[in-house]
Amino acid sequence: MKPYIYITRKLPEAVVESIRQTYEVKMWEHEDIPVPKEVLFSEAQKADALLTMLSDQIDEEILTAGNQLKVVANLAVGFDNIDVKTASRLGIAVCNTPDVLTDTTADLTFALLMAAARRIVEAAEFVKEGNWKSWSPLLLAGHDIHHKTIGIVGMGKIGETVAKRATGFDMNILYHNRTRKPEIEQKLGAVFTSFEELVEKSDFLVCLTPLTPETKNLFTRDVFKKMKQSAIFLNASRGPVIDEQALYDALVAGEIAGAGLDVFEKEPINAEHPLLTLPNVVALPHIGSSSVETRTDMMKLCIDNITAVLDGTEPKTLVNKDWKPLVNA
Ligand code: GLV
Ligand code: GLV
Image (cartoon, rainbow, N blue to C red; front, side, top):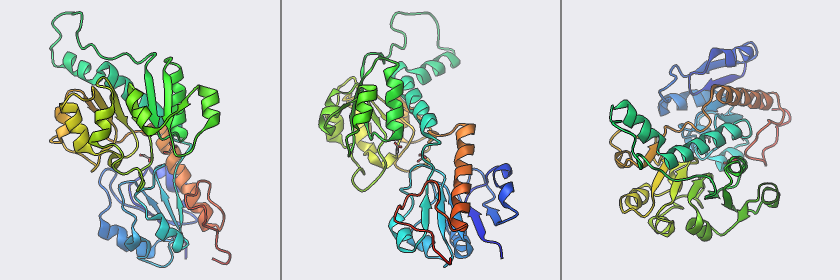
């Protein structure tokens, strides 16, 4: 019997056609509707491999549904939706898609920064709604980006690549990270600071830290209160890293100047979400890595990781580094 790969979303056939000879491959039938938990559970009972989305909760129930699951390949760099500890205990490899999405996600993060600073979305809507009656000296005046201070929380590869873009805008670069990155300091002139100092000094505070128990609710009302009143907060990592109510309150109270958000506490959000009522919030539907090129590369990387594990070899981008290919699998 061919090993069975279940893909939790409809992907372009071109991405999977090459593996159909060797593997039995099935995809959830919708492109824009997540697979229901019951369907995922029953597929996981039979699957040798799952190719999952960040919107799927891969918990112990799913991981233990069957007894032949060998690999979960997540179409994202983040893997907070997967119970990695349980996967490791069960000898299941967990893979993500770092590197291939770094530049694309940094581009989007910087676009979000620029959009929030220069009020691009508000201005574009203003024109489309027919409100442009005359040029005026302070019409939609925003905030400068060049020569300002950017503070990056989470200096992984994406953080570094955002910092590289910031050098082109002559920005002062601060960062905070669990571990110091001397090479980045040397190469880009980034300065390592405490979290508190970064919060107090940044004109643009960019959150790129993965969601972990330590970073959950890292940005509280107290943290927002310590920011500059002119500061703009950007989040391109995971929604639960910030207390969304606290961000809303800080924006309403004028404690910070604006926000650009690609991620939210509970996704998707609907039009009634309180943050969407604020003109100084730019909201995007979690599209950080969403270019056609990069999403295609991410899909291919997931497939490569799956076939590596099913062939009994080490996958390219393994999350649980303690995992080893099983001899005599
Ligand atoms: C997207 O958020 C990702 O983790 O790739
Ligand atoms: C991870 O989140 C990264 O910044 O590469």
